Length: 295
Ligand SMILES: [Fe+2]
Image (cartoon, rainbow, N blue to C red; front, side, top):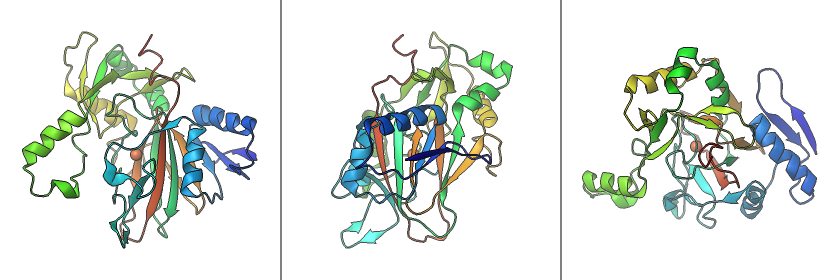
C-alpha cells in the first residue's frame, strides 16, 4: 500500500495498492490518521462489492442507515444511493442529491464523522464534488468576524432541502412540513467546533442548513452575520472560483473518504442527464462532534 501526498493544489492523499482483504491493522490505522489530518483519502482502483464497501466503513466507525429509506440501496440499507437510474424495480436511490453546501447529517443531533463515497457509474465529464475546508475558512476569516462569533451558537435545520417523497403525493404541504419539523427538529451547535482529534478550530456553518445564530445566552444575533460567514468562507460564490473551494474529481475505481466535521461539500451534477450513480457509507466515530461539546 502506497500513500502519496497530493500536490499541484490538490488536497489530501492518494492510496495505491489498497486491498481491503490484505490490509493490516497498521495499514488501516495509517488511513484513519491521514483521514483526520489530511481530510481526504482517495483509494484508487477499488472493485468492492456492497458488503465489502460497508465492511470498509466499519474500519472508520459505526455505519448508520440514512433516516429516509428512499435513499437506501435495495439490499443494503447502510448504503445511501444517489442515482438517476431507473431499474426494473423503478427508481433506485434518489437523483441529484446534495447540490448545496453542507456536511452530511449537519442537521441531526449526531452528525457523521466520516463519509465514504464510491461512484459506481460516472458521467463522461463534469464529475466531481466541490469541497471547502472549514478549518482553513476559519483561519482566513477577518479578525472582526472571528471576534463576532466567539462563544456563539448556530441552529441547523434540514427543512430547506428535504425532498418530497413519492408517498407525500396528495398530502397537504402543511402536514409534510410538520412531519419534517417533528422528525428532524433544528439542532444547536457551537459556531466554531474544536476537532476532537486534531484540535483544529472549524467554522461550522453551511449554506444549506444554518439559519440562525445566537450569543452564549441564547439571544438571537443578526442574520446578516450568517450571510457574512457564508460569503467569506466562499459558499455564496456562484463561479466556484473562491480560493477556499477545491474540486475533487473522480476516475473509475476511486473511493473517496473525507473528514465530515472539517469539510463541507457540494455535488457537481452533470447537466446532460447521462447515467450517474454513486454509493455512500457514513459512519460515527468514537469522538464527540466537537471537543467542547462535552467539556
Ligand atoms: Fe452530502
